[in-house]
Length: 331
Image 1 (cartoon, one colour):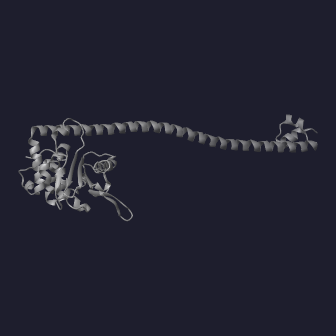
Image 2 (image 1 turned 30 degrees about the horizontal axis):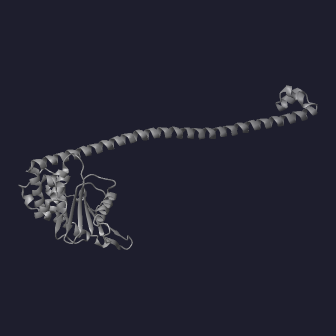
Image 3 (image 1 turned 90 degrees about the vertical axis):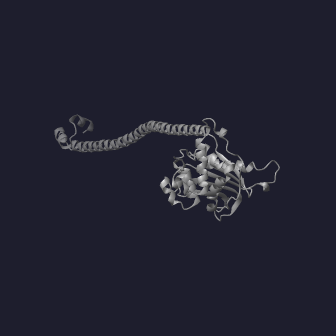
């Protein structure tokens, strides 16, 4: 029978990685990552804020964090973030800064600060590259010199698990991290009765057993179902908000487009009308000017013919001037 609960749901994630009695699980998860980013492994781990079911009472969103220290006096925090958040990079830095600052009391020497490592497990893709693990430090981009080794923020993007999905992918694990990512993505489908479960590493099987016990506890299972209802409600609200925003955006875009189209049409029509009016005015003025020039020329010819003593009929025939205009030309 499959487990039936997801390890990435906040209440389950905190139970798996935030239980002092299962420190080996959290330590193994961390050690599957740290060598990949050039950091030495954790030899011993102490959970500072152990799992408490009461934290998750009620249908509200809670900050799921696991706070610990290791044998080297490093502070370590693990965060689970299921939904995409555009401000998550700022939250990561703010979260680290608050934890780092809280290490000292007023008047303490800054040299008492301890390295602060924060691991973010992301349920959605955040970075556009293909890498599933990123490690961020404060360093000179040009030559790589590190300003302060105390800062380390690691991200793991579960969707970038390189095709590891479904129980059939059990034979494809090449690293402990791949196995952990597979577990986080597919933990709900694991069946403790099958041989595939027994092929998992000890720490993964321990994590599965934590989930199995958790799922069989009535109060814990009820809390899990409430958390799932909360997640579904939030996802539905997010989808509705996105659709509503899309529809409002379309309506506003259509309205703005119509207004802009009308304004543009008026402007283009006005410009075209002015251009056509100027062209017509030039053509008409040119035609009238040419006609007037011809008339003046004809009158001058008529004056000369009249002076020569030609009859009015002959002058009209020769110049096209109206007969009643000849009287104003004089003898």
